[in-house]
Length: 295
Image 1: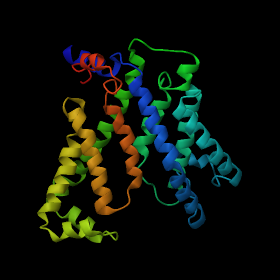
Image 2: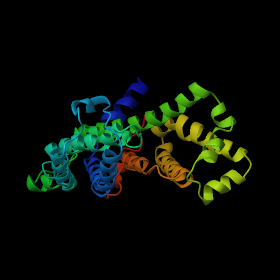
Image 3: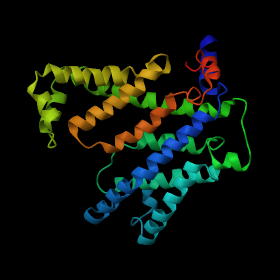
Image 4: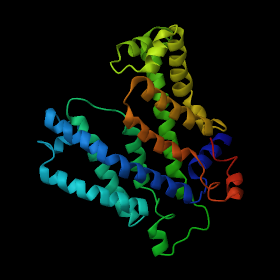
């Protein structure tokens, strides 16, 4: 019964709308400033590679036409700014989510399926179904709508995104252990990956010049601590520690292997782990949730 109550509090504990609204702003800012680069890379693929639809993109049998691309290029920035400013949020956020699925996913139909933005898109789907415009938005000012009391509808989207993030990392680590066992970090897998990497830089060469045990230690930290032990993020104080570990992981991969820019979209998702009520000068509410905002 005790654990049932904890799970119930984790997903449905009444919470103010600020944290959810702040997450909406973070997502929209990322989309507004990163979208042009992603879309330009995708359009470049259409010139050099053959369109091979996967998944739901079979509905575009011959790919997106020029007129459809023009409509997307005009409509996407508009709904992005509407979502950021919180204007018609109940409509603009689902439209933004749908267009994001098309834009981020369209580049996967040219021979290679990237996997850097899936977590971001899944979290965006949850965010688009939530009342994220009830605070820090033009909608709330226009209707003079205030939410003085915490409500559970502002808690479940954040808790669901947290669960999705934790299980994503855990499944990655578990899959590595199941498929390769402890050889993943006891053998020379990471060392060979760095050795054959064509984008070697100063840091990569420095790691390769060290004893191979350094690569084993780095692989152990990633597979065991960062991925397999990620469910610890359900509990304090690990809830505050793991988002920084995940961020450090992305930075490290980008510095050592190069590229992997899409993975930084996941940083937006990690903002769901922070209780922004403290930031908005509500320390009394923050203290009241300290014991229940976990499993």
